[in-house]
Length: 111
DNA sequence: ATCTTGACAGACG
DNA sequence: TCGTCTGCCAAGA
Image 1 (cartoon, chains in turn blue, cyan, brown):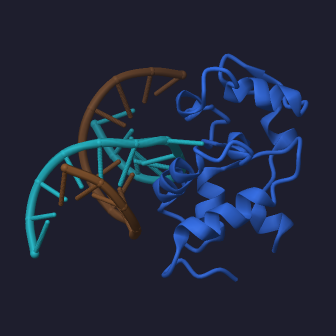
Image 2: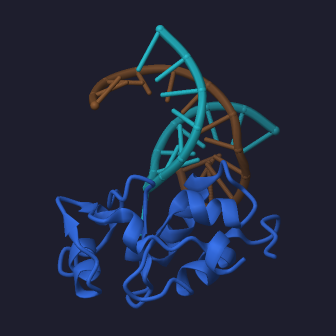
């Protein structure tokens, strides 16, 4: 199990990279999985550093409502919605539809 | 060393 | 249901 004391950033990366295509998770779940359930903001902070990595699937992380709050941090060319849509995740008006159907919980999936 | 900022979440009125 | 406040913890100024 990951330890948050050292590099939260790395941990977040590892978890996000494990999100299967066509699924997504939330900031809170990642934070909880990393042992910092009240530090969802740190996840956003970590993802912020990955936004320069084009291939990083940061679009698979949304807030707990399934809302694409971070879409503004994506390039205008490749919007978050579009990326999710490309993975058959239905998004409407910056919100993921059938949330429960596509959610991927690291706590459950990774143990 | 202190203050502000943040891609959040839960609690309250 | 909705708007606002608070807790959280790591960076950058």
